[in-house]
Image (cartoon, rainbow, N blue to C red; front, side, top):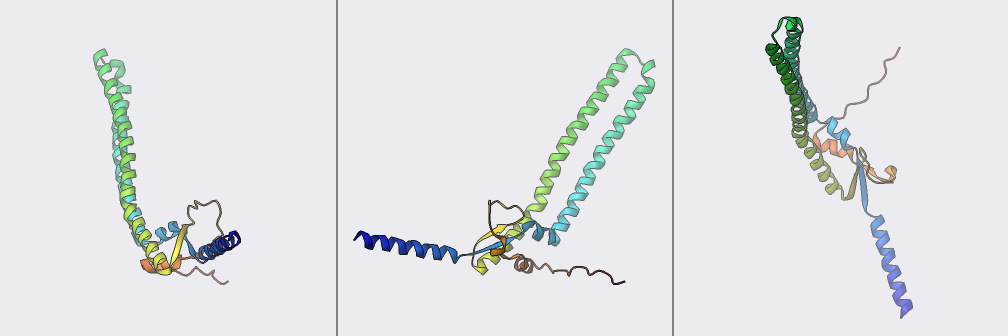
Length: 180
């Protein structure tokens, strides 16, 4: 009886191993997919414009400070002590305002970046999910940020062409060198 139970357990284990090895695995570089999407280029353009606007505002504050500081330096010798103290406080407040604006601008930029990139990444993820389900893949590994200690990329199916097709991204042929 013990021998029969041992053989049964071994047969079940072998069946389990063969079932696991029959599962399909795939890989995709999500960064390459996202970078190829037209929505990504549009998001980058919008983010650049937003950043440029913030930079212009910071430069305005800096110009205001520089002008007031130059005026202070030029006229401080003839200023009354109370006026001099008031101008120094004004310059300190302007410096503080600039530092606060820089911090807020950086946070706003990061929020805007997340707001613009989230729909792009979601669309790419949805396409990967659709292709993976349609292909019957058990798992899809993102090779842009590998989180596994080891996996044999050659054994994994690259589904990037299928995902690009799902997203409507047209493959552009590589440039051929000009003949002399």
